[in-house]
Image 1 (tube, rainbow, N blue to C red):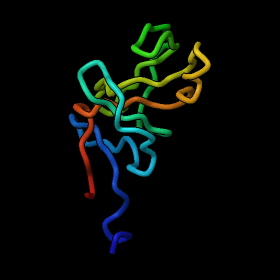
Image 2: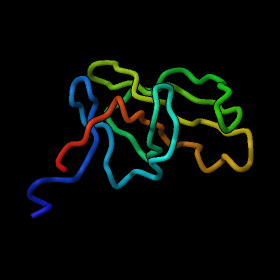
Image 3: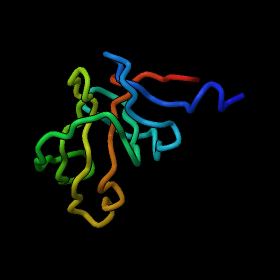
Image 4: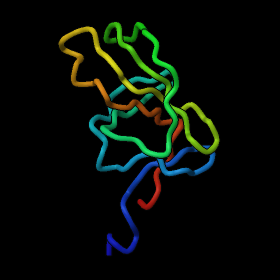
Length: 106
């Protein structure tokens, strides 16, 4: 039955463009700019902005904002580089803000 419905995924809250699979959630206990955020191993149908260094709660990181490729809504960011050894696991991963994504096929 699950195959008939399709995979559980997250879509852009603005235009419903498919952004990420539920199976790619690493953690639901992150903080975004506007509240709770999820850490994903992959994201799709996005555009990635220019890299910049940002001082986040867990230290200095090089990040790039992530946008929906259809409506250009800012959804979160991608970790490009972590300067602290304990944060290296975030490199190449995506933060998507809970307020910017909606559940599909649940």
